[in-house]
Image 1 (spheres, rainbow, N blue to C red):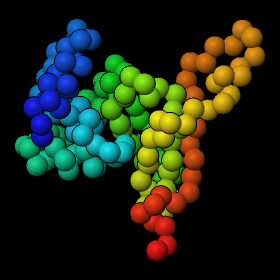
Image 2: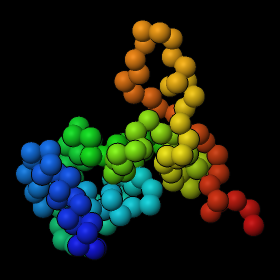
Image 3: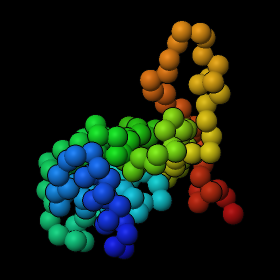
Image 4: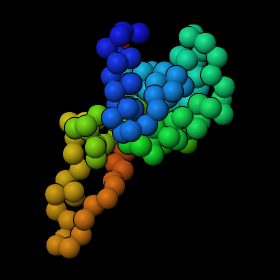
Length: 141
C-alpha cells in the first residue's frame, strides 16, 4: 500500500472533522486502491492480510464511510452489496453488473440523461442506474 493512499485516506477522514481511526483509514485505503466496487467479503480478505479487523467493526466502518460520503454502495444482481470509494466527480454515475461473475463496475463516464431533463421544480437527490450484461473478462474468446 502506498504512502499516498494512506495519506489520502487520512486526509479525507480528517477533512470531515472526524477521527481517522485505524479501522476507518485501512478500510478506506482498500476502497481507494480497488479498481471496482468490492463486497464485504473481498474487503475483509484484503484487510486480513494486514491484521485482524472483526466483521462487525468492518460493517460499522463501511456504513460510516457511506454515511459520510466517502464511499457508496451498490447492490449487485446477486443481491450482495459492494462498496467503492466515492470520487468527487463520480456522483450520480451508472453501474454495470456482470451476470456471469457478479463483479460490479462504476461507469463514471456515463451520466443518466434523465438527470438533465427533470421537469421544472424537481430536484434530484439520488439516482441508481444499473446496467446488466457480461464484462470483458467473461466474454467468449
